[in-house]
Length: 154
Picture 1 (tube, rainbow, N blue to C red):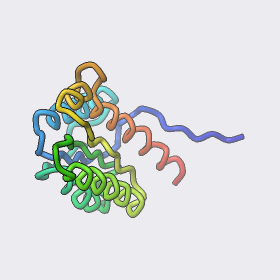
Picture 2: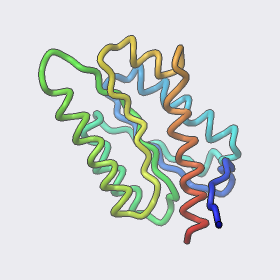
Picture 3: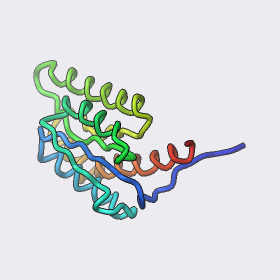
Picture 4: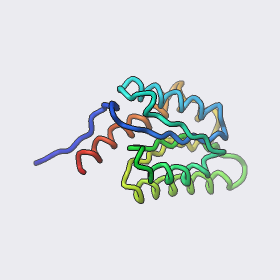
């Protein structure tokens, strides 16, 4: 039996991070977690590009464009959608998830879903660096490992 697994070594890997500005208190914490993770796993600061967009709905288009470029090996999508009293939450969360998945499948590159979809601001804060860790860190870990797996598969 042959097993292929990624290693958590970001040296030589080029990352783009797409950050939705809406709910910026959460997004900035996710970004800090992602950059800290990439740094601690050997990524060169010059190999990380951050692109800010208005919100989660705009993330997929920009992620797809970045993934299409040869200069990036992985794209990390970060943001937060917090439920309100209208159906807007479902539309934005669903379209962000579908669009990010399409960007990955169409590009053949890791395009990582690091967009929080929470019922409350408290839940989002917990996932952005307090009780539940930092999901930006987790998204960066997934990008590092998946980029290595894709490289190994060829």
